[in-house]
Length: 461
Image 1 (cartoon, rainbow, N blue to C red):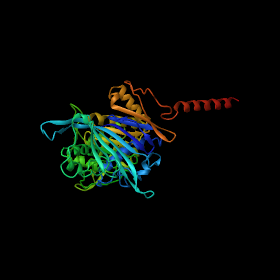
Image 2: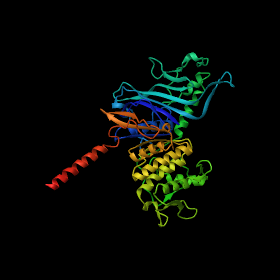
Image 3: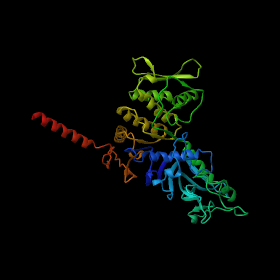
Image 4: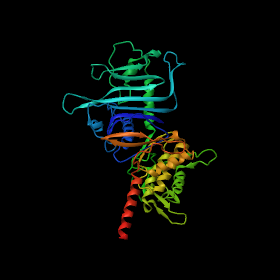
């Protein structure tokens, strides 16, 4: 699970400061306040980790990527190529990582269940206007009280040193005998080059850090705000998608794949295990959207399927295309929460789009349930006051603890994004409610009352 994030010089953020992340983390704020950028930095790291190009420092994406960010200059704060893009993140491990001592295999050099990564990237011009490349200025992992990283050799382009600190703890890298060849740059923005393990006798464990980073982002899934329109029929050839797709286009594939694999969900002690389809149908019913939900083949053994729903118990079945648009919009959200592997992190961008306020509030319960029953971490950005209010209520009712929900308000000041941590007490109250958080409600009521008073005065004259 991601536990902390910070970055500098990315889009509208000069510096986010340290952002503690909880099992449910929500960012609220007005349009263009920087909410989406917080999710985008994580998507940038994910698609970089999954890129096959090891020499590409950052995979800024294209129209097939999770996020398309343009050029390096485009993502820098104020488009200043002199700035350094700095990213720091920390995460907990599913199980403690133990680094054995190469000299004594039975002894452990380091052991911890938490890792930090810090990486700083700058633009290096090649002498011609507008041309150059991104280079890593420093990359380091913090683990078990030590820092292991790489930084450039002073005065030498694209030659790097390997370092460990604090050096007074007794561990140091031992160079292999032979000519001291210089080290090349890091792999992507987070990895140690193969030469590190070849040139040093006791550096093989550094690949464990890279693997943990890649596994973290392999367990991170994203669903965007613009979702596919429902279809009258779906084709499925047996594929098992990793997620719903950024527009939710693979949701029916995922439901059928979970059925084929016999996937069952735990609902807690003493409760019957459910299929993903059963859990999704139960939530759709509980949210008051439909009475029943089923994916069925058009012909027995065929590859074409239809999604049938019933608005209420006494109504006739209809296709999903013939009910309100909200069902198809929330379906990928709910399905992803129960289809993603346990312990995953899910990024949701405006999950409340096209949903009735009552359903927006109920969506918060879906997210809390996925967090409690499946260990899913939810990071979302939203405009929904109803979703926020339900989270506050669940804290007051002790369904979740205040430390299980991290709430933030994003705003802008002089073109720069700012982040305010919302202070949630044991009773679900926000002690530092920002001005005009969801608009000026009291101002609207006052203006309406004044207008009504003026009309009444005119009517009496």
